[in-house]
Length: 281
Length: 331
Image 1 (cartoon, rainbow over the protein chains, first blue to last red):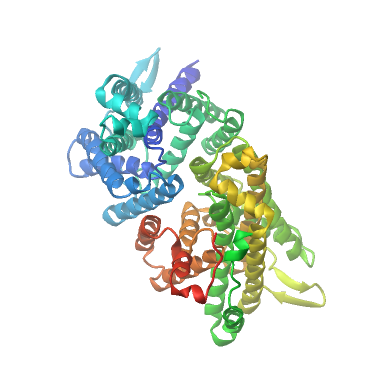
Image 2: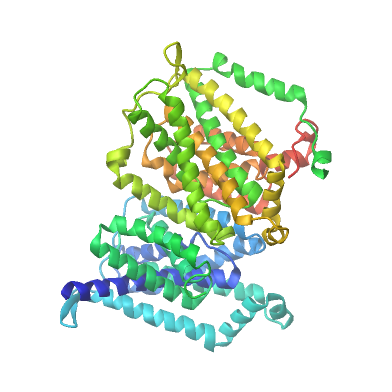
């Protein structure tokens, strides 16, 4: 029974992490039709923000605050300088953002060195859930994910900015005809999505090894989540995250984690074949 | 038809001089230079296979190194377990068939699942990590992180009568040169055939080709399988020139091959070789010691080529006065 509860919580926290990471990807794709291969590196930058704060002797909570702001700004810069020129060439955007991801990785290497960093943990200890001990920080991750998802939904469906975004998605030229500055909406959407990536990295930083390569694994998984869930929809991200995260936790329970990761990606490929539009599509 | 009108035969003497220069190369340079060029030509074949799918059918593969690595591993494993003379030929066939099979499987799931365009690239990227993990954990067969070694050295020729050791730089070089020319001609034949034209039509407008009654997913699987087989072949050729390790399937290798093709010029075939040689020689001159700076440069190059120079070197050559010397085919 204990194993079951713990494993379920593991699944939920894994799913939360995946949802947090993939949310930004889904926003960018849904809004701009752009697949951002540098998203993993934005995630990595978020983690480095926390590590830097720890290194400077400040509370890692500052890192949590700084990460989305800095990473969001970097995202906007990328959008203005590179992505904006490539909206009509989706496959080329892929290569360009791939280039961006390499550049960010190498710049981080030049600044911080090749080795890995660690951040001081934000929370220690465990909390009792249904009578079983579970690390408090993992519960915090779940809570943050729920809050961020609610906030994103609120932004998307209840604010004027969200209305503009949805209008641009459904009919870009009509939006422009109605006087919406689509270029500005694009920039902000990209910035927000990047900030989400940075936040996800910052939240994850105490749980993983922080090194320049860390973004790649999360990027790959994030995309699997987005595709399995249903491309470009916010609900899809949640469904995809739940399936992939839950699945991985369940398989890890039985087999080695490496094998579980292999199986889950292969399973995702099969799911795509059966349900090309994703589980929510 | 229109294609044929635009297509001017390259000047015979230019190709002749180029061919003679390539043939004479091992005679006038050191063994090191010879094996270096052989290695780059192998990479050129690898890039050519990517250009076939990326430049002609619009399938962008961010995990193309999977097939290169699969070819090299298949070759190594076959050489290890087939101890008889002449095993090299079987090993090479094996090294082509294994990646091809992986390509067909992947293509079946993704192309029939209508995962096209950008998302195909993304899934292949995710698969790179998976395949690398598979190779690392099945260390009994692949040698894991240490890489695969102690296999029989690949030999060409007629077993028992006359044999050439592929570990000799000169033998490797001429083999690779012949292979490169062969692969280029094959690729040229494919893209000029009716099949090749349909493939290019798919790149332009998939839906319209579908309306015309073609089985688009099937055609995509076919061209993808051909490209994967060619990538595997280049991986097999790489075996005598380098080490078989999980590094062959790294994300960096997949990224670099994209840059080679983009720099050379997509959809030109010859651009794959031009880009590979240009970037690879640049890498040796800028020295392998500064790995961090080198990769940074590759990243910047990828961005710049896409933003300001999307047609690559060959596109540039086509547009300007070099046209009279190198009248490359428009595509």
